[in-house]
Image 1 (cartoon, rainbow, N blue to C red):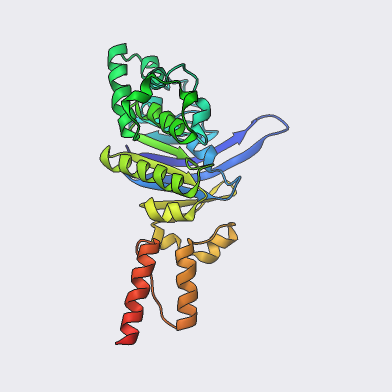
Image 2 (image 1 turned 90 degrees about the horizontal axis):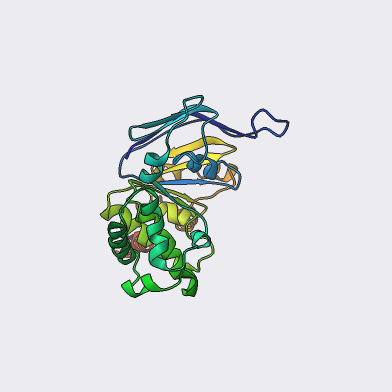
Length: 288
């Protein structure tokens, strides 16, 4: 699903003495099936922006178009169910939103709420539990008897049960150890590719943004600060640092290497493997 954001502005507590502008004149287009990373310092407007993508917040000015659904400031009151079915959000610590007595019932809750017949909802729960790497036997268990990592996967399954076209991820690896973070992000990337989703990832991790994203947008003080492909964004180190960010560690290492060696090496994938390959080739040339 394509996403088009035009001159978006959002003000909290509008019309009161406590009014605060959180977003200003944001213009952004996200193509269908893109893995899009949204990064920025705390308070930059990232979470406010994504809450507009399924109607949790409404524009104070401007508009958002999600596929054929248009949300605009001052528009008529709309039925947001079609939008919320198409755009699923995985919030920080999504396991805190589990509440049913069994995993199956928790996953079925969303589809049943949107009118899916019970038998179809059960089949959906059975299908998506395997998509998140959990066995069928989990369905009959209480979600509160599972490990933290399993609970998070159940919560993700609940979002996937809606069969969204857009998957919105708000710091989805918060609180996980390094190996758990890699597992969850690889899971999302696999789902993105297999289901041909448009994925919007909010993250503080430059490493995750560099590894998975096709495009990156940087938010700063409620405005769109930078937007481009990872290679373009990571060439703007001074601009990133001015916004309280920095390039990935692999890029930092290569910049120091270039400074010491006098070379001008560059990366394409920004992974440790890519860095090792790049340096290995450089050393091989030196030795020949």
